[in-house]
Length: 252
Length: 282
Image 1 (cartoon, each protein chain N blue to C red):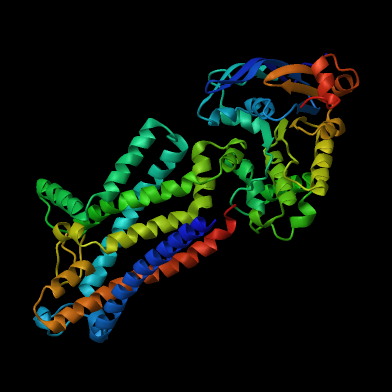
Image 2 (cartoon, rainbow over the protein chains, first blue to last red):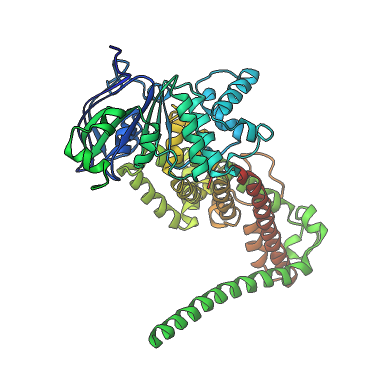
């Protein structure tokens, strides 16, 4: 059997005195979409942001345990955090374009990692805008400020920006929560086509979205992992009473 | 219900009254400067240095002070900018919410309130100690010290307003703090940074006490960093101090020139900020 792409081992997270994640152990298989589900405030985003070590930009946070990416612990001393984030991209809930043009937003990652310039960079930008499904709408105004795009377009720009670094994993933190249904549908469609080649982890509090997208499920409840496994199994025959109650809408 | 209305009414009158008082005084000051200065203002004043007997009411102008002030405040602002931006970035991206950072902010707030004559005296002591005489360079350093707290705190406040998610967006792409600071934070805050710079420049060009001992005064145009330099606030001071009404009128004209310089710079930087604004993410 193939080794899971990401293995989470004994992960604990504290915000000051608050114990936000308690002893999480889970595997995220390579390729496909893994959805982290559960009610608000249960540590879904915390778990997601621990996967690219973005959590530590917060001052009062403390993390223990291991997260293995292809068997390598990303929390080990001596690991270059920027390299981790180059391999694991993030799509945030609310799109935040960088304060520059559409072109420069996508070129930002390749530029800081010294990958390509001039014509080569033009191709990188075009390819990833195509991949994010935005190229048709912006190819005539690449020099325009990214902030002038609509929210739905901005989110697809953020997707293109994340993809332009060529990550092997894409983390999506409620990626459609700020979007109208049509824009949300487009993002979901992009994720569906991307999952052939990369590992995608989606945090969502929308069960319907999880049912549409997920191949694997991680169910969190108040900072604890209740159940994890293939989507068909978790949705079809949940092992735990709490999962059953959450899925049927009795709790959460 | 009724009491609420009385209170509401009282505070409204208070607010409108305060605004009117401040605006009224400002207009009065500007009006006096324009009214009394305009009559004495002529081309010679702007294009000539003081000739013999200028302070007795004879020929000449204040070109020495205009050029001196631009050199002094311009140099000080450039010097302060090169020091302020790294400090403001450090306070927000590296020392955010740390004890060190809070201590630095407290020190800067205290320095902001220190009267400018103290900066002048400090600069003067330093120059005596180094054996340097009153010079353009001394004035630039004293003014830069005066401008530093204003500029740093202005930039600091602007950078602190940046949404966390914007910085995270950059970090998440594998950018380091330095790359995020220079490529994202500075671009996002450029209009606000410009405002901080302008505010500091305004304080610098309008200050008399800090340059009194450090830059000295001369009737000639400044020709070296190590020679003395004239300034507009001191020109106003010296001319007002003479017993001749004609020379006193020239003091008002000098004040008018100073006001117009600050006003022109504000307008230019506003237009510039408007142009730089287009990439700012809201």
